[in-house]
Image (cartoon, rainbow, N blue to C red):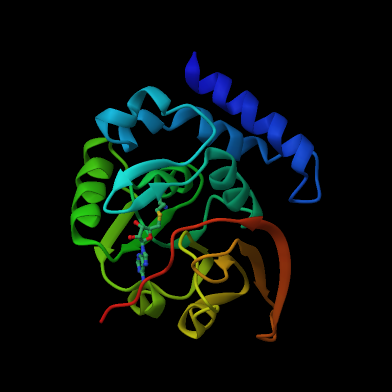
Length: 215
Ligand code: SAH
């Protein structure tokens, strides 16, 4: 089955890359990757590539991330059953769905209205009732449901948005690509300590679409 082959490939990739410092990604994360129907999250013309380990176009100049990167980012926040997670950049809704299998609730913000509408409808149709989405500029986070156990940013920012740091729980983790539009970015893992300090670790060089701002 194509999805199982994709999971094997992601596992192999993780073994080689060791971006987490360990040889394998968390078993629950791999299980989520093996369960979520990625073909439901891509447009019809990309469907035959749905289980290849690469990003795909989802329209409006945006992409659904490479499965390995989705798995890596999910692994790095160390998801726990009782987590409430904020995602910036809903896109297709795939990353939100992967998280939804692992945590209590996912809040996700998308800035492009058509994508936000499509993802909301898709997630509802597929039964992901622990995901809540909204249209907006994720730079400001989502104050109403803060603080979060973890924050996953899936678009590249020039800097870490201060509102997101504020909305992270002490002990919480944020994974975010940081860097300019026309260069590779650094995937950063931030950890907020119990006394509100932030510890940052560089994980890998990545390429994400830019985090755009509301005009
Ligand atoms: N997580 C997505 C990947 C989406 S690509 C998935 O699994 O499919 C990044 C997304 O971030 C794009 O859809 C883009 O429109 C969105 N985005 C860019 N800037 C944003 C912002 N300021 N706030 C919210 N979403 C933003």
